[in-house]
Image (cartoon, rainbow, N blue to C red; front, top):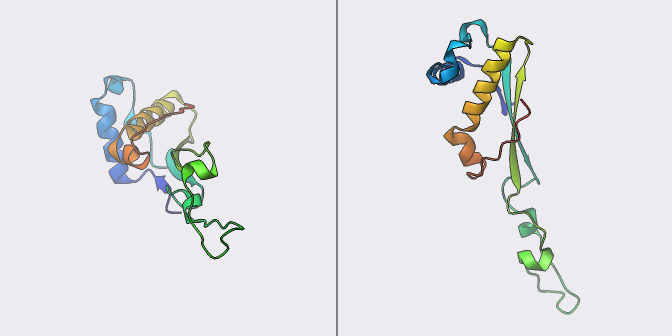
Length: 132
């Protein structure tokens, strides 16, 4: 799957550098966590057209003018259409149950969520519903 990011060496180095620069570096033992302990799944959830509005590709016909079609305005379809048509979910799986691995997973999630690529994918909204 192309949306699965397993704890590869460049990502591990990126997260380790973020963790070592944080104030919690003294209580986190990064060396004890292996690539098999933490997996990150980045899952885009959308309406089938990515971040585009699927209603934009629908043509509407009326009884009065059967041969003319037109795309709709937002107000013509519904006033309840969302502003965003795609959501990015980031799932962090920690296979170990000890507190060190959990702290590493949480630090990695927080730092990964605040990095620039995620803000670009979510249009800068950066709404985090963390369940860690």
